[in-house]
Image 1: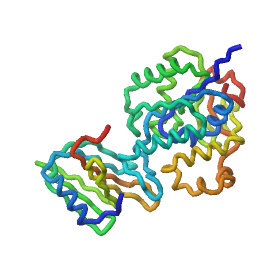
Image 2: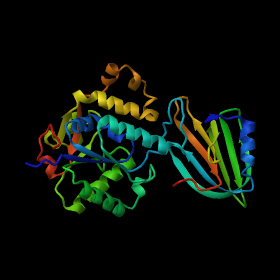
Image 3: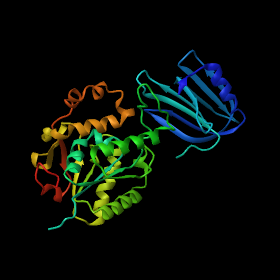
Length: 103
Length: 232
């Protein structure tokens, strides 16, 4: 995982706009959703780091997360975003894929 | 006299449960020839510690922790490892009937003398409590007479009265000669222990953190018949 560069992440998110995608999203100590299937219509990145990211879905719906610090496009082409604290503990994760994530 | 080796089956929830909680005991019995089979219901893939500095993400974690557990098994002398492929943090939502059946099948297959698992109430994590409950149910289903014990954290059961137990309910295993193996297993679980500076101190200093005993609650009549200082 690499530190987030905002404009790079904006470019990477653009690839998913208008697509049916699968999302994994978690606030690690509290909640996770895995394989929400949505059609992404808009994606926003805000902040100077840690970053905030928000999605709007087709028809209706939002997903907003904060505390994101790192990004990686993995070997199978999924976009993995995460927020770590200063000792390597995960606070949040936000993953986008065109195929389902393993259950 | 039977030449069949003694056998122990440990049914836990996450990679590292075996090392962090009762690694000394497992290393001790393995070194005396006991065949140990370990179940990890999950691969610990929803853990929060991702290395320090972090080198894992949610999608790479399962594989990394599986490898770490295999390494820890080597450190402790655990010969057989099974995963149940339940997603981390969801064991309590797995079908309890199927889970108990699966564990019962393994009990029949392994035919262990001793079974270790978590206490249904004091497991400390929902996955722990769930796998413990299903293991108790599984042993009942087999109708087999095996000594079942609940593992416990640290020295909390050195004074069992505060938990409503008497000394007779508790086994205490002297692991003072097996701290080196336990420490190696801690270090094998690198992504989980990098955050704990003491684990990476020189061996002698790090091993000072370990108590001389690991404690177990006797979970059934078979266990209650055993000596206080030996699970077998």
